[in-house]
Length: 194
Image: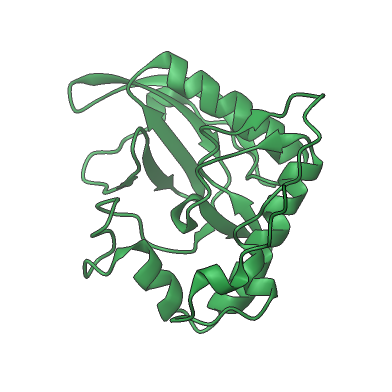
């Protein structure tokens, strides 16, 4: 991991285009990732959750926190490692991507979608084994760092109740079972008995 400390007074985003999620703007500034939020609470929450997951190699490392004026607003940010995104989330939602193909359309257009699906399933298993649960595991919230799948949007990742011994269903397991694009996902769902 490189040095992720940055002097906010030297950050100049003029003319730079970043990508946006639901609550975060992301910029690659000379090899350092900047995540910017409109309020301090979301920044602090992201920083804490991502840092905790990074300790378990489930997310990119975080560096320093900062505040900065950009486009006439105060933004609250933190630095992070740069990862390769699996899909382009620009535009976020059903028409995300440069050609409006949507997140899943981009995912299935990749030659390695089955291998990536298995790696995402592994990441989700590790997340569960580390004592967390997460309900926002769509393909746009994962990236690749050093050949491994990591979580790049850690909002909603919470610690599981220590008394929660319920079984864990990982919808990404379908890729381990040979799921092909166009198959009925229901054919890969586990049988639940009462």
